[in-house]
Length: 254
Ligand SMILES: Nc1ncnc2c1ncn2[C@@H]1O[C@H](COP(=O)(O)OP(=O)(O)O)[C@@H](O)[C@H]1O
Ligand SMILES: [Mg+2]
Image 1 (cartoon, rainbow, N blue to C red):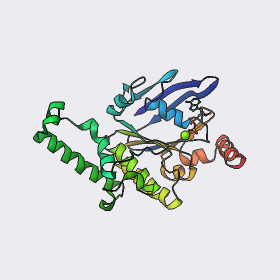
Image 2: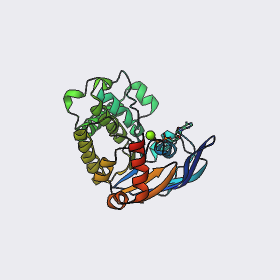
Image 3: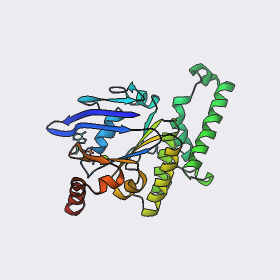
Image 4: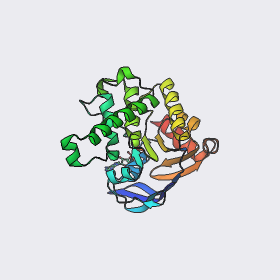
């Protein structure tokens, strides 16, 4: 279980997270939705160690990770993607995914310098692993040697998820993975995420796209103005007046 308890974060006078508690079990898609400014990205940044909380705790399978640095949190089995794509400008698709693998490279620095068989083996292993992940994300071999930044947007999103998967995470935090995708691409992404959950990965899906979330997640937490205002199954959440108000207010008012 990824357990988030009573997180609080203030930016000056702005209470960006108010006592946020969320449970995300392994092997399921747990969604966090809410209008723009609700605090979703702040929540994600706190969980992944990019921002430290003012209070509260986060544990992964019982291990406290609150206050750890991002790479330490990644080593605890928690990977993330970013709301804005961060493709390394000159890397190929394959190289981009291989960079995610570094957590698993065992060869020592000396071995690396000497290019011993162990290093060679690790690199071959990393490339093969990356190819498998790219295939999982439905990015075929014709794309692997292209510059990641040159791919169509929807495919870049998939490369980013493949890179997160390369760390072999127990949990993945995805910040608006469907942003900029058309309906068909969104549905395809939802199916892929469901497949990953089926392999045991706990997915925290942070989304503005309410339809994607309704169709693909097991449990939904709704945020507004920094707090969790409702949670439940898609059916339960859909019918709650406070959710309708927060969402429709945003959609129609903005
Ligand atoms: N680093 C920051 N400094 C100050 N205010 C911030 C910072 N990051 C986010 N905020 C503010 O916190 C609120 C929540 O933002 P965010 O977490 O990005 O919301 P969401 O992802 O739900 O759209 C917004 O009012 C935003 O302006
Ligand atoms: Mg956001």
